Length: 111
Image (cartoon, rainbow, N blue to C red):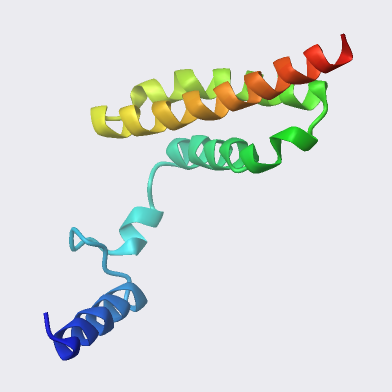
């Protein structure tokens, strides 16, 4: 691929994002009008899983609360289509697993 063609592709992608066009041709405005129920679980999911890099800094009580939040979200992801369900449940399982591992490590430290 020539350098000029590569630059043209990058520019067109940048313009598509700037004008709100998704890869499937739908506008981002339509995506923003998703059902409020989906947006609420998505916000909770993003919040819970965004804390994994700080897991070692949390107390045992905070880790327990995060694990409970992961468990509560697991049921809410059951309503997604198969592909989304597989992706979100897999990531949620990994987040929960990390929190559980860190919690167990902190419990063993105190012994």
